Image (cartoon, rainbow, N blue to C red; front, side, top):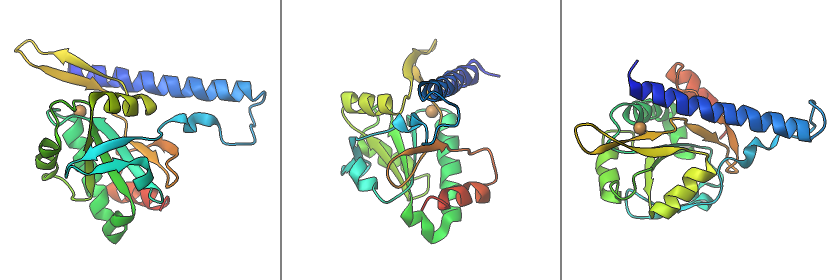
Length: 199
Ligand SMILES: [Cu+2]
C-alpha cells in the first residue's frame, strides 16, 4: 500500500469515526436510543455559491429537486479523483435518461490552479452530466467545511505538491440533505439503482 493510500484511508477513517461520534452524541442527547426523528447527521452540506466549468454560477438552490452526488478533489490528482470520476461517469451512463434528473458535482480543493477552463478540459474525459466547481479559495473552504471535508497541501520530494483530501462521495437528496456516503465499490447497476431511488 502506498503512503498516499494510507493517508487517504486515515482521512476517510477519521471522517467516519467523527460521523459515528456525532451520531452517538445525538442519540445520547436525545435521551434514548430509539430516537423518534432522524438523527441530525443531516448537518453535512449547506448553502454554497461556486462557478462551474462554463463560468456559470451554481448555488445550492440550483440543485433543489435533484438528488446529487458531490465529491471533492483536484485535477492533478494521480488516482483517487480520476477513478472516482470514472466510476460516477459509468453510473450516470447506466442511468440513461434519468441522468438528467440527478446531479454530480466535483468541487476542486485547489481553486487557484483549477480554473473553470482547467476544469472544462479535465471533464472532457468524463460523462457530460458532471459539473466541476471552483471559486474563491474562501468560498471553496466554506463548502469543504460544510461537508466536513479535509484537504491539505503536501510538498513532493521532486518539487511541486500534491493534496491529501477526503475521498468520500456524498449522496444528498433532492432537498439538499445528506443521505449517506455513496458506495462506489459495487456493480454499476446497483449504484445506479440506489441513486435512482432518490429521484
Ligand atoms: Cu484526488
